[in-house]
Length: 474
Image (cartoon, rainbow, N blue to C red; front, side, top):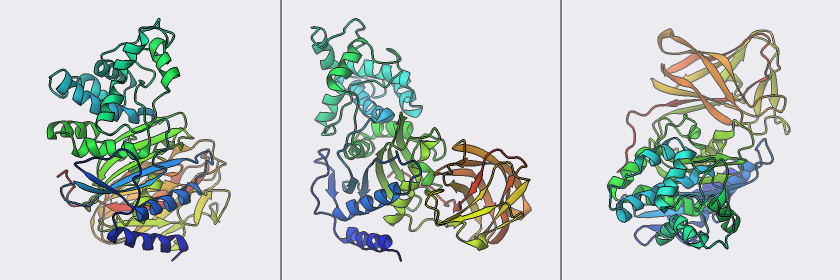
């Protein structure tokens, strides 16, 4: 057992028996729901985050702010919290839309005395599709303002009353103890009032700064959305926040097992990639997780936080009790075979594939002769399995996302032909297949065509069994 794993196991045992002792991580706490900060949980997150960041391929990715909430009671009135950089502020991108959604429910029901979803025509696409245009309409409605285009100074007498209204989201969140040191006054651009801030909206940003969030209060906002809103409002929000794991609407979800119930709001722009998520694993384990980062360094990095999430949940023991998951890497030479000697085995490299799983990976240089790579797998029980692949980064590649032909041989000799989705530093999905119990030879065959223009990297494959039933909200 390596040193890091030994420390993590010791800390995990501490979490089970000690649920208090840390100072509050942030201001966003409630009277009706107990949130207890946990020093051991903090340490596990810190060790996981630092270990993950030490192995990222793009070294500009150097910021990771994390908060996790875990329930300790069936009625969801008691939670423990772990954090890493809990109050660090950063640009949240479209994660702010969760705050606008919660504010819109209050605006409709308590201010306008209408049904809670009175602006659903705007709020729905704002959340479900992260639509910036519709977000602008939501902000205008819930603050009862529109932009004043010929206002250019905070000294203009029109600015103070306009700002008072535009600041109403901050004021409402503050009344719920959900604001802390954050700011939610600005729209997300381009939007209904311009490609960039103009007029009063520009003065607002110059005077009070842009939107900022911190992971700790963001996690509390998700907890409020899931469990403190009235049931009809909470159910409405859950429907809007529901996503599938591989639809590119979550930065963390590719690491979650099939059958996971996911609610989340992603945010990605510039170098920032963030996610505020609530999910229930098929084993019943429930998690609220917020990760804010500057990991969006490549256009394909929309799921870059998946590997960190996988490591964190594993280190916390939250994967115990799941249906079978078979993870195979190139470290296990008995799990694969080749049909040519053009493949190069690279082990313990400090320059290439530093974000790999395990120690080794295979590389095929560009423009090869046609060749195949064969994965074999020992399946522990018959059933439907999700097949996913992980690809570490290669400096020689001219693109961080490309595809290869792949053949999947599954139940009773059936074969399907797919596109093998390579996305560096991330899990990507091939598909769902029935597999028989026992050894499945040539279960997945990577078919590299002649003169393929990109280098091919193969590192890890995962076969994850679907559960017999899916988790539901209590």
